[in-house]
Length: 149
Length: 149
DNA sequence: ATACAACTTAGACTCAGTCTAGACCATTTT
DNA sequence: AAAATGGTCTAGACTGAGTCTAAGTTGTAT
Image (cartoon, rainbow over all chains, first blue to last red; front, side):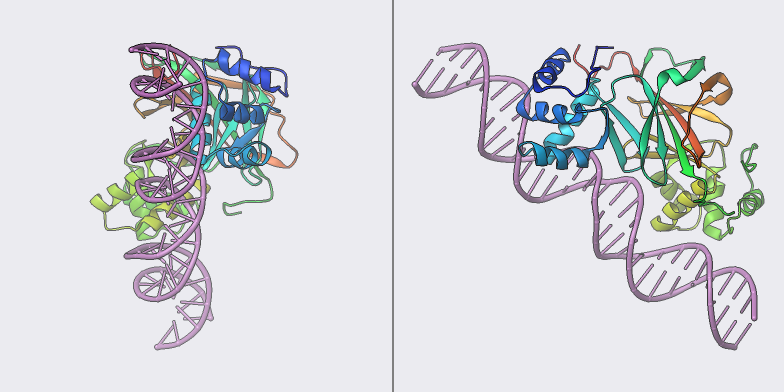
């Protein structure tokens, strides 16, 4: 795994360097989006990225936001977290970690990988390799029950 | 956790009993859908359930399929597995297990929970409880690289 | 029987995400 | 300098999984 980032927030020059280190051409729009993402470790939806980048930076189209987020994910710059159907989040936390998703509030928080140990034999098929390993723990406030009492 | 099922395939009478055990009114359509799901441990999309139930049983509407699958999930009868955005699968395997998702083929396979050990302190917020814990390992065939070589 | 609640349905609707065709921009070639 | 090249960006049309609505049906209790 390529080295990513461990000091938030990142300045534009650092963002540009990081993109280049990952083999991504640092265009205006890509730097804007990455600069937004790496202000702090955070989880944002594509929609939120679109809205925030268009508030704080120059206008970027919807297509570019989706393309750029997909590009960052494929190059390993950020992670895609699937919490619920139609709630894909993009995670700028670059350290190994897992997730806790609160079904009631929609809030997603992190668990450092060091706090959990996953051990065992995966027995992966021949000729395949691990691309990612996502542990999402779904929690719910005790009083709000959807199942019968 | 309520007891579910451990002998596939289930007959209609057993399906009906199971629904009642979970506090779900066993209507015609719900029994049809559950009977389809519990033929064997399998992963099906809502679309596949809709198509298969309408082939092998009497016609059921799209809305009912979605409503029923959601109902089964909320009552803990089946599990929802999020593999990729727009690829939500419903899993009739009722034993504790994890998943391996092949990004190239779209195939989803199981890992018995016994093969992996997850240990550690979750440090959950006060007043919350675990609803589910989903570990999805995403794999990819070694030759097909999406990132730059 | 009548009433009431729960369930189902067809079809309209929503909205996250994709696609397209053209515009833009930087670099190289002539 | 002009033209060609290749990668990127954009507006807006489009797709399709999933939801909603309003009306009809079924089951159950009184």
